[in-house]
Structure formats: structure tokens, C-alpha cells
Image 1 (spheres, rainbow, N blue to C red):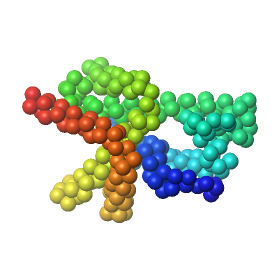
Image 2: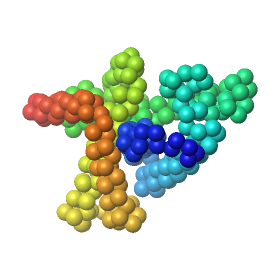
Image 3: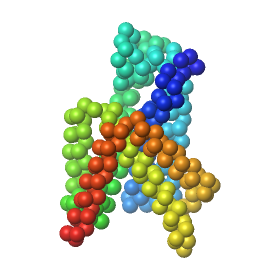
Length: 261
């Protein structure tokens, strides 16, 4: 595992930050289902905790086990090719059992189901987030309505589906991941700043959930998010510009619909 550990130096490690963030991306979306939870103060905490613990364990197992098979090159480049693979885990398992083994095909099948489950979680969180944006007239009120019978954010889900299909048709998976990570880091930074502001300016608010090890945990989260944002911006200047252009478009949309309201 230590052989050729940093072929591109620490710069290469910083350049890979978006893909590390992607491993945990959208877990914060659990908070968006508080409206559906019977006991959100208890159940949301359980959901967050169990999901985060599962991801941490799987992340450590993935990194150590797959790279430990034959080094990182064996799971990045398919045999006889210098083009990076989109399926590193099957490459690692193929080194052990071969591509004809049932375990190899089982891994691919489970991975596909895992992607479907992940997409469902993202769709759920995105639908609720877009619904709230529409309700507050940050974007078109069209997405801020729920179905009269099912009480689900149908309009928001359809709009998000269309955006997702357009993104897939570009074929720029890596670039889309990076832009999404810019958005996630912006959310993390703004959330931590807002958290400290609320604790300082609204001490009288009811707080059924207390952040552990305050103020150390949120401070560490804020520092890590800022460093990651800085590193990503250096290595992805064009994508950073695209992201902030999207943010600017969103701000213009916000001003427009607030004025119309």
C-alpha cells in the first residue's frame, strides 16, 4: 500500500478531494425528511448516526482492502490499458477470484443496486429541498406545491428528474461530481457560519438536539470545508467559474421571484 503512494505528490491528493467528498455526499439530505418523521428529534438523529457510521466503515474497508490487493494501479488501470477505469472495485476483486467467478458478478449486481438506492436518497432530498425553495419563492413557485392527494412534491421531483437527465446526457461524470461537490462545500460552509450565528444571536431558541463537543466539532468541520473548497478551486478553475455562474443565476432568480411575490 505504500508503493508509489503519491505519484503526483500532495497536489494529486488535493485534486482528488471531490471524489472523496462524493463518498459522503448527500447524507445531509436525511434532515429534509423531518416533515415525514413521526419523532424527528429522535429518528433523524438515529438516521444520521447509523448512515454516517455505515459510510465511514465502508469507506475504510474500500480504501484499505481494494488498494491492498495489488496497489492502487491495479484498481485504477485495467490490464493492458492506461485509461482509468470507472469500476475500480470489480478490478480489485478480479485480481482475487477472476472475472468469471460468481462473486465478481455478484459485486457488480450489488453495486448497481447500491447506486439505485443512492439515487433514491438523493432524489428524496432534492425533491424536498426544491419544494422548500419554491415555497419561499427563491425559485419558481411551481416547484413549491405538493400533490393534493399524495402530498408529495411531484413538481419538484419532475423538474429535478429533467435536470438529472440533461446532466447524464453530457457524459461528463467527473465534472458533474466536481460541480456537485462545490455546491456541497458551499452548503457546509454556510451552514456552519449560520450555526455559530444562531448560537450567538438566538440563545433563547429551543434546541432539542445539542451538537456534541461544541464548539470543537463545528469548528473542525468549517476549517476542513474551507480548505477543501480552496484546494478544489485551485485545481478546477473552469468548473469553479461554472458553479459560481450557476449560483449567480440562482440569486437573480431569487431576486426576481421575491419581487414578483
